[in-house]
Image 1 (tube, rainbow, N blue to C red):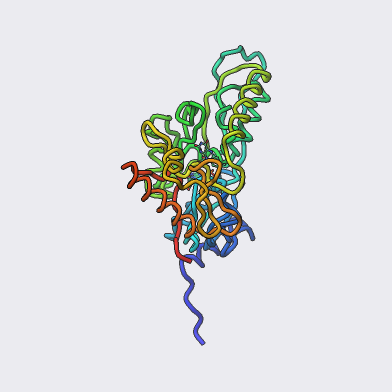
Image 2 (image 1 turned 180 degrees about the vertical axis):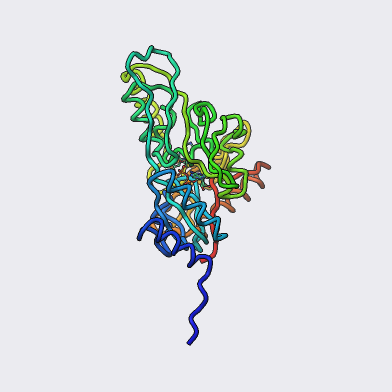
Length: 320
Ligand SMILES: Cc1cc2nc3c(=O)[nH]c(=O)nc-3n(C[C@H](O)[C@H](O)[C@H](O)COP(=O)(O)OP(=O)(O)OC[C@H]3O[C@@H](n4cnc5c(N)ncnc54)[C@H](O)[C@@H]3O)c2cc1C
């Protein structure tokens, strides 16, 4: 009997197993790795702990012509029930270089360098404890630095566009380059990286601009913003805001006015607390959520003539 020829995927799995020992896995269920708890399997799954590992894994996949998806904490994606073809890299590169704090004058500007896999709310808390101001807005935003740089994550009047100084990227040609914040051409929850074809540019590290203050001041501001978030945000498995707010209005207000608050489809529900949050009640499929998305968009268009644009990203194959 003839053995089947190895595919590019098989070859990549071998390359990765040589470089990363037994760390790559096959057919990893992605529902375990997204905040929505939804998503079929990744063909190959690898967790990286360092930016050099991240760059190496991407380059190995490119050499084999296998598509790559970089996953932060999966807090802004809806993964299809069919999963993601190719390599999914979970980014845990977690080094942070804090600026020297001794003798730092209040109000003085400093730079902090963080790997793209650093947890964003965790970093906001660590900065507050050190008396570094400027990242409090991020304390309640689940995700990594990489995801925040790509999405221009933001809240309470600030965002990455206002905090980032420059970013280190792995370019489509495989070189490592630092680019200033202007290069990212930031807009509301979007960037040049988000608009480019998936996986072309990889965020390796980010340099953030922060300001010296007292830990008490920064921690107080952080606690205040956390309270505001707790009061308005529904708990449970979600991806945050489903739609961008249309100019001059709120997506949640429009969906509620269309009478859709609390609507259920299979295991998914438009939150009864905040209509721009969709929840997985336990066994939701991507298809369930897509039905709710379609219903919200259609009803809001028909009633108010407003086009609701997704804030989250649909990723992978929708059908199992
Ligand atoms: C409860 C809740 C509340 C939220 N509140 C807010 C909020 O207030 N404001 C807000 O802006 N967002 C909010 N979000 C959405 C989400 O937290 C942000 O979009 C966050 O930045 C996503 O980061 P992530 O690391 O999980 O990205 P992922 O969802 O894992 O990835 C998002 C995209 O970025 C790409 N990407 C990730 N890392 C890299 C990298 N290193 N290089 C290249 N591409 C990369 C991915 O491939 C994907 O295309 C909320 C989400 C939840 C669940």
